[in-house]
Length: 290
Image (tube, rainbow, N blue to C red; front, side, top):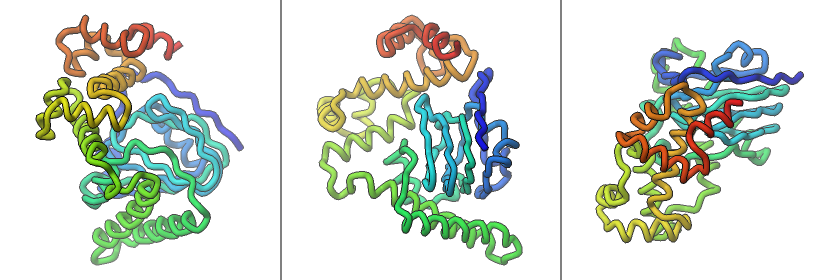
């Protein structure tokens, strides 16, 4: 059985919070096709303030994350980081088991690594590794149901962090080991981490260099040698991504979006968007909503 889910265009980008949605810092659910049909919010573009670790055992899931479409078939794991705009598009004979966990309940080392390697794409695993992941999430589900245990929260948190660590380690295996990173690559990773956190308030390359306690020239050299693009490119791209999200998923005016992203000079923001995207903000909205 196959079901295609159509997404509407809500007036804003909904933010699902852990406290309001689940009332707890850790939640597990099985999301079969039948059950997913009950969660209409999954079909609408939205953000979450929590981490999603999805273990797909069978079927095919098609979903969109920040204007990138992904189709995942068969056994795989999927990680969606907080604040990524995403929605489910199509489900076919799918069965997912999902760990939903807040920042506060995630081990600090796991959280740090996820912040360094994110965003990541869905990951296919070998049968041996997937079987191990499947066993780990099965154990999490068993502990999740044993609410009568005296140390329930400790047991649940430990098991779920073991699962998160196992999945994170599979993603990390694809990344270049930290000990093999050059000085340029280490600085570039640090810059990207700060950029993700501060892009609304911090626009000048010199301000990022100051945060990293190095010169602007050296930071630009590190970033350009590592990525092929200068500092200003990455700052602009992050801002424009957020602008695209708001243009597509909200009914805010371009002026309101400019102000929300830290630009009091609306004409400057408008020119920046046009130069970066190759069309005006209104043209982008019209093209994507038609």
